[in-house]
Amino acid sequence: MTTGSALPIERPLDAVLFDMDGLLVDTEPQWFAAESATVEQLGGTWGKQQQIDLLGSNLPVAASYMIEFTGSRLDMPTVMQMLLENMTEQLVGAITFQPGVLNLLDALVAAGVPLALVTSSVRVHVDMVLSHLSSQPFRYQVTAEDVANLKPHPEPYLSALSLLGASAERSVVLEDSPAGVAAAEAAGCHVVAVPSVVPIKPAPRRAVVESLTEVDLRVLTDLVTRW
Image 1: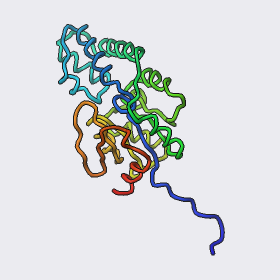
Image 2: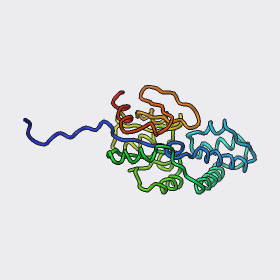
Image 3: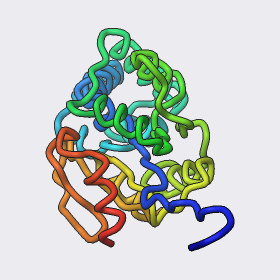
Image 4: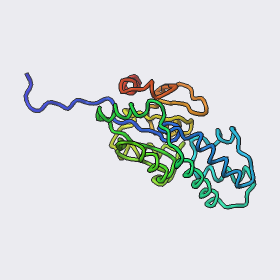
């Protein structure tokens, strides 16, 4: 028989961190449309390979790429603003959540697992997406404006872990792009990859699934406890 207060039960899963574009919401077609429109404004033609080159990137990287790709004489802030406006127009049209994501969010919230959204998108686009949720499951959102270095640098995920007070070794990141996976793994997290445009291979501490319909609390916990 023991006396005194019972020791707290240690939860194996500290946090789950969600990417946004391509993972939380199916915005890759919209980004392609916005990129195509921007490049057309610059006098060029956008293609599938260019979309792949920019997968998981951010506005500065995309603008710089487009200027070099088209030979435009416009400066980077101008092209960034063009792309921002074109993508905002796309998001106004429709926002589609990926299969399984809403059920997964509900289950994690019900289990008391801390959640954060970690994205290279700007705050205005994050707010547009989150406004379509009936509740706000994410305790924190780390956006392009919140860090000095964007994915594939680990800073966005390290920032989210710090905000949540979570350890990387007991946290799982959900990502769809190689750049996002690289950022998460550089931060020391476990990863569930749901490839959207380009393939991603399984690896130690990384599971690859076709859809978030295959992911639940047990899958996430098993990933953390197995490695």
